[in-house]
Image (cartoon, rainbow, N blue to C red; front, side):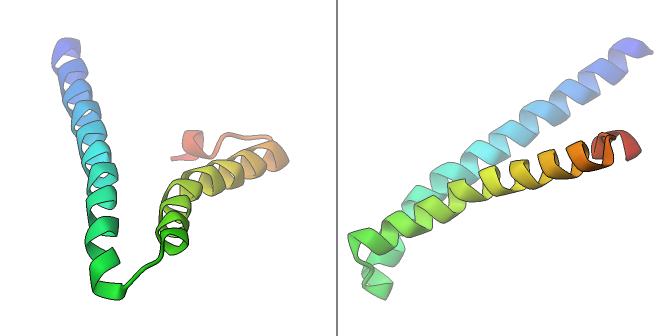
Length: 78
């Protein structure tokens, strides 16, 4: 029974990382496509990329602050 749970967790994890990687690659393609449609400069394209990857940093920072202030890990509550 435990092996089935491990396989299900592994399939979920692999699927999550595949989707995450796919979204990251599509971001590069969409920025180049929207460059022509919206007439973006190189600076504006860089800001789009910085916003996309900066969101990971901001969310991680918020998570860290919440967990350090409350003293409990928010994931453990779920």
